[in-house]
Image (cartoon, rainbow, N blue to C red):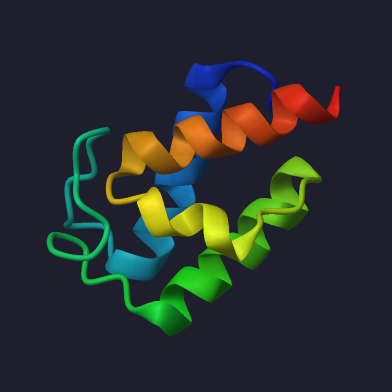
Length: 84
């Protein structure tokens, strides 16, 4: 189970690569919507994968402030830390 931030970021990037394709460069500052074209359906699928991977529950309203890969990784880290 991922507990530290770098591992969360790595696993998140892995999931994003599956949605966007192997040729897309994903960095922490990459914008999920504008640069990766993550629409609402892809986002919901991503969240379900994240919830399974990290054994957490991501509140949908928490996603309103998430725009970049780093912000999503921070949110996952916060939820995991609060759960422990």
